[in-house]
Length: 335
Figure (cartoon, helix red, strand yellow):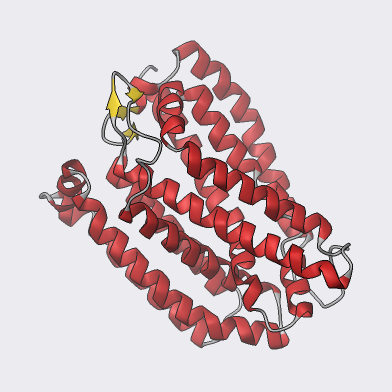
């Protein structure tokens, strides 16, 4: 029991994180694409495509962050001080993005540019801060006696900036493929035209991050390139390449649903690669899930709660997406 409970909880938190990344990722991606739309009516449609669902997507961020604090308090107390600044920037950017949802449609036309800026800027900055946080997390932290002993800007590095820009591009790709699925006519054509260049940018970032990551820590390098791991893990990059090819093909054949599904698959594969690189450490390269976990009785008590809540969250999330399925038409949506 003492062995399996931290493992089960690490899976639960991993699910919450990837659900947030995928579900909030595409509406952040729409914000990233927002300034490049040709007409203000197109921006209305873009925002309306996610207006009914965006705030529910952030439930997963609360579950992931709250779960980390409750289940792995050692990791939470170590990671948070190391990443205060990018996390605060991310939260403030999400606030700007959220306020823009409420005020953009109610603002006078002459003031709408400000809320366009708040929505686009907040979305882009939040995505970049999340990517920087991810890069700093992969690098690891200066730890002594399970406490962070580094400086307030240790997170700032070339690798973290690379992952920051990479996640912005990845979210933009998710947003573009979502718009392909949810729109039609001129806006859909505009999105198709931009998806292939976005794919090329994302591919470059995936290659750069994948090539750099094994050299950040010897254990990561050994995990991917020692024998027989190199043979056992080779399907991950191979399947990733196949997904990218299928995504390119689906866009060129002007499929509507496949590009979004394949974009999600691409994120899941990158997430799997990250898990392979870092697991079982929850504070990279130093503290394992067993060393960071709460008492067994606490883990059992909280697991009962999450076993009840998680199906409910999944059910209302699925129901919301079902209710608001289909194309978004001009003049429909949030007002």
